Image 1 (cartoon, helix red, strand yellow):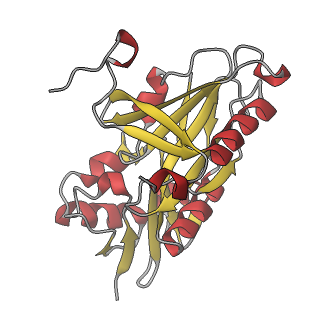
Image 2: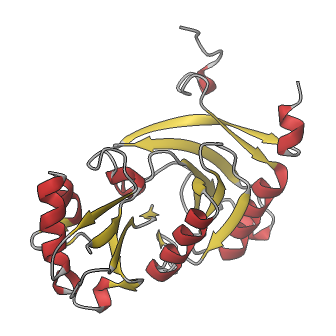
Length: 163
Length: 91
Protein backbone atom coordinates (compact mmCIF):
# COMPACT_ATOMS: atom_id res chain seq x y z
CA UNK A 1 0.00 0.00 0.00
CA UNK A 2 1.27 3.42 -0.95
CA UNK A 3 1.46 5.88 1.90
CA UNK A 4 0.21 9.36 1.22
CA UNK A 5 2.79 12.07 1.79
CA UNK A 6 2.06 14.49 4.57
CA UNK A 7 -0.63 14.54 7.23
CA UNK A 8 -3.06 16.56 5.13
CA UNK A 9 -3.57 13.83 2.56
CA UNK A 10 -3.06 10.86 4.90
CA UNK A 11 -6.75 10.16 5.39
CA UNK A 12 -7.62 10.48 1.72
CA UNK A 13 -8.82 7.29 0.14
CA UNK A 14 -6.21 6.08 -2.36
CA UNK A 15 -7.06 6.96 -5.96
CA UNK A 16 -10.36 8.53 -4.89
CA UNK A 17 -10.65 11.87 -6.61
CA UNK A 18 -13.27 14.30 -7.78
CA UNK A 19 -12.29 15.76 -11.14
CA UNK A 20 -14.35 18.86 -11.88
CA UNK A 21 -14.04 21.59 -14.48
CA UNK A 22 -13.34 25.17 -13.45
CA UNK A 23 -16.67 26.55 -14.71
CA UNK A 24 -18.70 24.06 -12.65
CA UNK A 25 -16.51 24.62 -9.60
CA UNK A 26 -17.05 28.37 -9.94
CA UNK A 27 -20.80 27.91 -10.39
CA UNK A 28 -21.08 25.93 -7.13
CA UNK A 29 -19.06 28.55 -5.24
CA UNK A 30 -21.13 31.38 -6.76
CA UNK A 31 -24.38 29.66 -5.76
CA UNK A 32 -23.13 29.24 -2.18
CA UNK A 33 -22.10 32.90 -2.01
CA UNK A 34 -25.42 34.05 -3.41
CA UNK A 35 -27.59 32.06 -0.97
CA UNK A 36 -25.52 32.82 2.14
CA UNK A 37 -26.60 32.91 4.98
CA UNK A 38 -28.96 30.11 3.89
CA UNK A 39 -27.54 26.78 2.79
CA UNK A 40 -27.33 26.39 -0.99
CA UNK A 41 -27.74 22.97 -2.62
CA UNK A 42 -27.79 21.26 -5.97
CA UNK A 43 -26.37 18.52 -8.13
CA UNK A 44 -24.04 18.18 -11.05
CA UNK A 45 -25.35 15.44 -13.29
CA UNK A 46 -23.22 13.42 -15.66
CA UNK A 47 -23.51 10.44 -18.00
CA UNK A 48 -24.17 7.23 -16.06
CA UNK A 49 -20.94 5.52 -15.11
CA UNK A 50 -18.76 8.36 -16.43
CA UNK A 51 -17.93 9.90 -13.03
CA UNK A 52 -17.84 13.22 -14.93
CA UNK A 53 -19.90 16.07 -13.48
CA UNK A 54 -21.13 17.95 -16.57
CA UNK A 55 -24.56 19.46 -16.09
CA UNK A 56 -24.83 21.98 -13.25
CA UNK A 57 -28.29 21.97 -11.68
CA UNK A 58 -28.73 24.41 -8.79
CA UNK A 59 -31.71 23.42 -6.65
CA UNK A 60 -33.97 25.43 -4.39
CA UNK A 61 -33.39 24.75 -0.70
CA UNK A 62 -36.98 24.04 0.30
CA UNK A 63 -35.97 24.46 3.95
CA UNK A 64 -34.62 27.99 3.25
CA UNK A 65 -32.49 27.62 6.34
CA UNK A 66 -28.96 28.48 7.48
CA UNK A 67 -28.71 25.06 9.15
CA UNK A 68 -30.63 22.64 6.92
CA UNK A 69 -31.19 21.87 3.26
CA UNK A 70 -33.66 19.72 1.43
CA UNK A 71 -34.59 19.52 -2.23
CA UNK A 72 -38.26 20.23 -2.77
CA UNK A 73 -39.97 16.83 -3.39
CA UNK A 74 -41.61 18.00 -6.63
CA UNK A 75 -38.32 19.43 -7.95
CA UNK A 76 -36.61 16.21 -6.90
CA UNK A 77 -38.95 14.09 -9.01
CA UNK A 78 -38.50 16.41 -12.00
CA UNK A 79 -34.72 16.27 -11.62
CA UNK A 80 -34.59 12.47 -11.47
CA UNK A 81 -36.94 12.15 -14.46
CA UNK A 82 -34.66 14.47 -16.47
CA UNK A 83 -31.59 12.49 -15.47
CA UNK A 84 -33.38 9.26 -16.32
CA UNK A 85 -34.31 10.55 -19.79
CA UNK A 86 -30.73 11.67 -20.42
CA UNK A 87 -29.11 8.49 -18.99
CA UNK A 88 -27.50 10.60 -16.31
CA UNK A 89 -26.87 10.19 -12.62
CA UNK A 90 -26.08 12.67 -9.83
CA UNK A 91 -22.27 12.64 -9.99
CA UNK A 92 -21.98 15.49 -7.49
CA UNK A 93 -24.42 16.46 -4.75
CA UNK A 94 -23.38 19.75 -3.21
CA UNK A 95 -24.47 21.95 -0.36
CA UNK A 96 -23.03 24.75 1.69
CA UNK A 97 -22.39 25.16 5.38
CA UNK A 98 -22.77 28.78 6.30
CA UNK A 99 -21.42 28.77 9.85
CA UNK A 100 -19.26 25.65 10.09
CA UNK A 101 -16.47 23.98 8.18
CA UNK A 102 -16.96 22.13 4.88
CA UNK A 103 -17.23 18.72 6.49
CA UNK A 104 -20.31 16.44 6.58
CA UNK A 105 -22.36 16.91 9.75
CA UNK A 106 -23.97 14.01 11.57
CA UNK A 107 -27.23 14.86 9.80
CA UNK A 108 -25.48 14.95 6.42
CA UNK A 109 -24.03 11.50 7.06
CA UNK A 110 -27.28 10.03 8.31
CA UNK A 111 -29.28 11.33 5.34
CA UNK A 112 -26.77 10.62 2.56
CA UNK A 113 -28.55 8.16 0.29
CA UNK A 114 -26.62 8.28 -2.99
CA UNK A 115 -23.68 5.91 -2.46
CA UNK A 116 -22.21 6.65 -5.91
CA UNK A 117 -22.19 10.42 -5.56
CA UNK A 118 -19.37 12.76 -4.64
CA UNK A 119 -20.73 14.82 -1.76
CA UNK A 120 -19.27 18.30 -2.17
CA UNK A 121 -19.37 20.65 0.79
CA UNK A 122 -18.49 24.30 0.61
CA UNK A 123 -18.24 26.62 3.56
CA UNK A 124 -19.19 30.26 3.38
CA UNK A 125 -18.51 30.94 7.06
CA UNK A 126 -15.55 33.26 6.42
CA UNK A 127 -17.47 36.10 4.84
CA UNK A 128 -17.96 34.43 1.47
CA UNK A 129 -20.91 36.69 0.74
CA UNK A 130 -18.51 39.65 0.74
CA UNK A 131 -15.84 38.00 -1.41
CA UNK A 132 -14.23 36.11 1.48
CA UNK A 133 -12.75 32.66 0.82
CA UNK A 134 -14.91 29.59 0.17
CA UNK A 135 -13.72 26.22 1.41
CA UNK A 136 -14.47 23.45 -1.15
CA UNK A 137 -14.11 19.77 -0.20
CA UNK A 138 -15.42 16.46 -1.49
CA UNK A 139 -16.41 13.24 0.26
CA UNK A 140 -17.80 9.80 -0.30
CA UNK A 141 -20.51 8.92 2.19
CA UNK A 142 -21.44 5.25 2.16
CA UNK A 143 -23.45 3.61 4.94
CA UNK A 144 -22.30 6.14 7.49
CA UNK A 145 -18.64 6.03 6.49
CA UNK A 146 -17.11 9.31 5.37
CA UNK A 147 -14.03 9.38 3.16
CA UNK A 148 -12.51 12.63 2.03
CA UNK A 149 -11.12 12.69 -1.48
CA UNK A 150 -8.87 14.91 -3.50
CA UNK A 151 -10.50 17.65 -5.59
CA UNK A 152 -8.83 18.16 -8.96
CA UNK A 153 -10.00 21.24 -10.85
CA UNK A 154 -9.33 21.10 -14.59
CA UNK A 155 -9.83 23.81 -17.24
CA UNK A 156 -12.12 21.48 -19.23
CA UNK A 157 -12.73 17.74 -19.23
CA UNK A 158 -11.18 17.21 -22.67
CA UNK A 159 -7.97 18.88 -21.46
CA UNK A 160 -7.86 16.59 -18.43
CA UNK A 161 -7.92 13.52 -20.67
CA UNK A 162 -4.84 14.56 -22.64
CA UNK A 163 -1.74 12.77 -21.56
CA UNK B 1 -51.50 -5.44 -15.57
CA UNK B 2 -49.54 -4.56 -12.53
CA UNK B 3 -48.03 -1.56 -10.86
CA UNK B 4 -44.57 -0.43 -11.86
CA UNK B 5 -42.33 0.61 -8.99
CA UNK B 6 -39.16 2.61 -9.71
CA UNK B 7 -36.44 1.75 -7.23
CA UNK B 8 -33.62 4.18 -6.32
CA UNK B 9 -29.97 3.16 -6.47
CA UNK B 10 -29.66 2.75 -2.72
CA UNK B 11 -32.45 0.14 -2.59
CA UNK B 12 -31.45 -1.86 -5.64
CA UNK B 13 -29.57 -4.35 -3.52
CA UNK B 14 -33.05 -5.57 -2.54
CA UNK B 15 -34.16 -5.96 -6.17
CA UNK B 16 -31.14 -7.71 -7.60
CA UNK B 17 -29.98 -4.46 -9.18
CA UNK B 18 -33.24 -3.84 -11.03
CA UNK B 19 -34.26 -0.20 -11.52
CA UNK B 20 -37.94 -1.05 -11.79
CA UNK B 21 -40.02 -3.95 -10.51
CA UNK B 22 -43.71 -4.78 -10.57
CA UNK B 23 -46.01 -5.13 -7.60
CA UNK B 24 -49.69 -5.48 -6.82
CA UNK B 25 -52.11 -3.90 -4.37
CA UNK B 26 -55.03 -1.51 -4.01
CA UNK B 27 -53.22 0.95 -1.79
CA UNK B 28 -49.64 2.10 -1.40
CA UNK B 29 -49.48 0.13 1.84
CA UNK B 30 -50.48 -3.08 0.02
CA UNK B 31 -48.04 -2.37 -2.78
CA UNK B 32 -45.21 -2.03 -0.27
CA UNK B 33 -46.25 -5.26 1.50
CA UNK B 34 -46.32 -7.04 -1.85
CA UNK B 35 -42.94 -5.54 -2.72
CA UNK B 36 -41.53 -6.78 0.58
CA UNK B 37 -42.77 -10.33 -0.01
CA UNK B 38 -40.75 -10.45 -3.23
CA UNK B 39 -37.84 -8.32 -1.99
CA UNK B 40 -37.61 -8.96 1.75
CA UNK B 41 -36.32 -6.08 3.82
CA UNK B 42 -37.30 -3.27 1.48
CA UNK B 43 -40.38 -2.30 3.55
CA UNK B 44 -38.26 -1.49 6.57
CA UNK B 45 -36.35 1.05 4.46
CA UNK B 46 -39.59 2.79 3.49
CA UNK B 47 -41.86 2.52 6.51
CA UNK B 48 -41.27 3.29 10.17
CA UNK B 49 -43.86 3.04 12.97
CA UNK B 50 -46.64 2.55 10.44
CA UNK B 51 -45.86 5.63 8.40
CA UNK B 52 -43.58 6.54 5.52
CA UNK B 53 -40.09 7.46 6.64
CA UNK B 54 -39.53 11.20 6.78
CA UNK B 55 -36.65 11.19 4.28
CA UNK B 56 -38.17 8.89 1.69
CA UNK B 57 -40.35 10.39 -1.02
CA UNK B 58 -42.94 8.26 -2.77
CA UNK B 59 -44.95 9.40 -5.78
CA UNK B 60 -47.97 7.73 -7.37
CA UNK B 61 -48.44 8.95 -10.95
CA UNK B 62 -46.12 11.89 -10.17
CA UNK B 63 -48.12 12.97 -7.10
CA UNK B 64 -46.25 13.15 -3.80
CA UNK B 65 -48.23 10.72 -1.61
CA UNK B 66 -47.86 13.04 1.40
CA UNK B 67 -50.63 15.06 -0.22
CA UNK B 68 -52.79 12.11 -1.30
CA UNK B 69 -53.15 10.04 1.86
CA UNK B 70 -49.68 8.63 2.48
CA UNK B 71 -49.66 4.85 2.79
CA UNK B 72 -53.44 4.83 2.30
CA UNK B 73 -53.13 6.36 -1.19
CA UNK B 74 -55.24 4.42 -3.72
CA UNK B 75 -53.28 2.58 -6.35
CA UNK B 76 -54.63 0.65 -9.31
CA UNK B 77 -53.31 -1.48 -12.15
CA UNK B 78 -51.20 0.50 -14.55
CA UNK B 79 -50.24 3.14 -12.01
CA UNK B 80 -46.59 4.13 -11.61
CA UNK B 81 -44.95 4.36 -8.23
CA UNK B 82 -41.62 6.18 -7.87
CA UNK B 83 -39.47 5.96 -4.74
CA UNK B 84 -36.81 8.63 -4.25
CA UNK B 85 -34.69 9.21 -1.19
CA UNK B 86 -34.75 12.82 -0.03
CA UNK B 87 -31.65 14.84 -0.81
CA UNK B 88 -31.20 16.63 2.47
CA UNK B 89 -28.83 17.40 5.29
CA UNK B 90 -27.85 20.06 7.71
CA UNK B 91 -25.10 21.22 9.96
